[in-house]
Amino acid sequence: MTSIYDVLRRPILTEKSSHQYAKLNQYVFEVANDATKSMIKEAVETIFDVKVEKVNTMVMPAKRSRRAQSRRVLIRRSAYKKAIVTLAPGETISVFEGVR
Image (cartoon, rainbow, N blue to C red; front, top):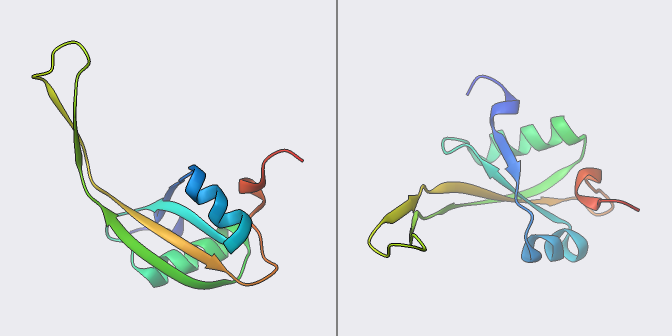
């Protein structure tokens, strides 16, 4: 890792993650595979200017799927690391909030 901007890859926006940031004050990011919890905490606090309470990480396994036309061709999505970041009460990340 060279900088904190290499740690966070993209936010993960799903129905479950939208429930987590609306009700539980948790935000979900795809992170670099070699990122540690302390690196993720520092990156989120620096980039979004918030106070992080807790970071949970998990490695999502690779998945295989079939092509629609020929069922023999298999496509493999690579594995990635996901981080669930819990913020202090009252803190929000405005990027996730959307249009008001």
